[in-house]
Amino acid sequence: MLEDWDFFVLEPGEGFLEPQKVFDNQKPLHLEIGSGKGEFLSQYAPLHPQWNFLGLEAADKRIRNILKKINSERHSNVRLMRMMVDAGIAQLLPPESVACVYIQHPDPWPKRRHHRRRLFQPEFLKALAQVMEPGAELHIATDHKEYSIWIAEMMLKQAEYVSLQNEVIQNSPSLQDHVATWYETEQRRQGFEPHFMLFKRI
Image (tube, rainbow, N blue to C red; front, top):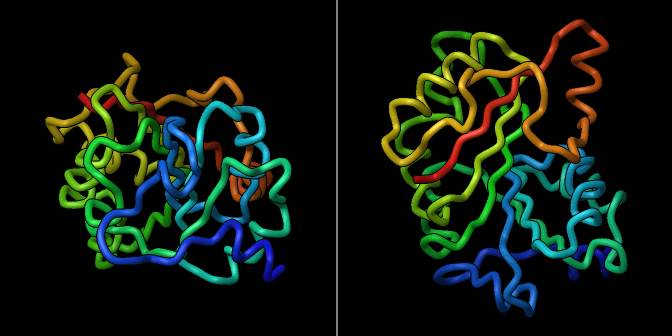
């Protein structure tokens, strides 16, 4: 486990994280914000060796759970970092360095008094746009109906993004190789259907 930690887990340093140095190649960088139990990275990354993947997760426990699902042979294009994601992401990655972003089932903070804790805020979306290449895609999933409407409204107010779907909120995944996370599977079992959105960085 320690060897896996040393291989996969990046420690924050001074200045920007440099993807080309981290992966020792020039492949496009795909970013997953909130990697949960690691189903997406462990299953999706091996299908796409032409891309590099960086997963950001806030808790060491979740990082350790992800490490149980990946290995350096099949997932050499994956790295992880423990980070509470907010507008500070613009200080982590160089401008226009991310080719695609995945945000799946972020905490909906359903109580009104907690809405300010939600990830999708104008400051975060502006910072995220800074690190995304023009034309980069942003894939979003949530099973929380009210939060999906909140996200859609927030995204449509941001001049940096445009929806790639006529109906902003969809009931089917935007990814061809969709991976159902543990959370999505559990919520479906309880009768909560996910909602999907797809935006492009202008």
